[in-house]
Image (cartoon, rainbow, N blue to C red):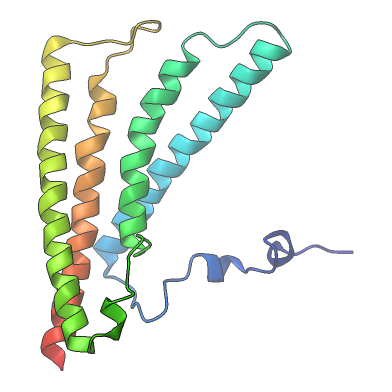
Length: 185
């Protein structure tokens, strides 16, 4: 008996999993490239985190030798994974939204509400990016290191502003698409 990828994924095809949400057109090549980069970075970080955690559990409970600094490594990897996962979810328009009231509005009013929401989000994330850069430069100038492994914090703090800059890029692309929808009709 031969097993297909679709069977292994519980009936979902790989094409369906990577498909865009209904009604969303394929973005331009630079956005597709950035989306692929963001998902690769977060995926590699998650893979590394999984190996470190599994190795630490096996080392701690089976070999009686945990990985030194595993907790620090997991913290550093989370600093990479989270901003890039947030950016990827923005690229896929997967953020949670409350549409109970908005879905009852006319299409044009919904688009205007979407524009306002996107502008507020971009503004707030702009502050996150700014503070991410401030934190990175402070960590770099003070040469802060982890307690056990003595790994510098700065390279991992750099993931915060870069990941959220990708987030803003995706939000700007969605904003442009929403503007086109409003002015098209």
